[in-house]
Image (cartoon, rainbow, N blue to C red; front, top):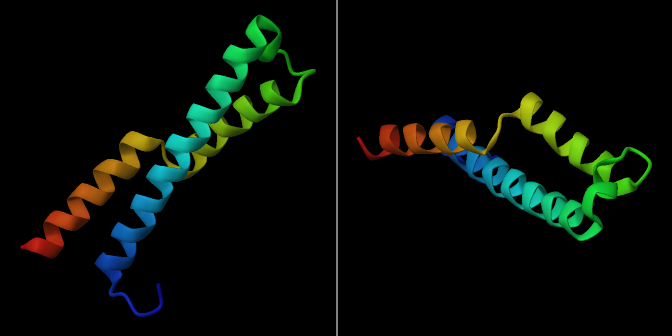
Length: 79
């Protein structure tokens, strides 16, 4: 990342955040699905992970906002 310009760095970070958020959401949702309704309880680790994933999405931007940032930054680089 140190070798990239500001817009390239922003695009790379947004792409990474998008993929991580997408993977985390898929894994936690599938974990809850495997455990059924019990997976939503805070007593099981998967319930905690689901809530943590949602909190991180709010703090760091959800998949839509990161994808939008990536697209806008890539458009600026292509112009």
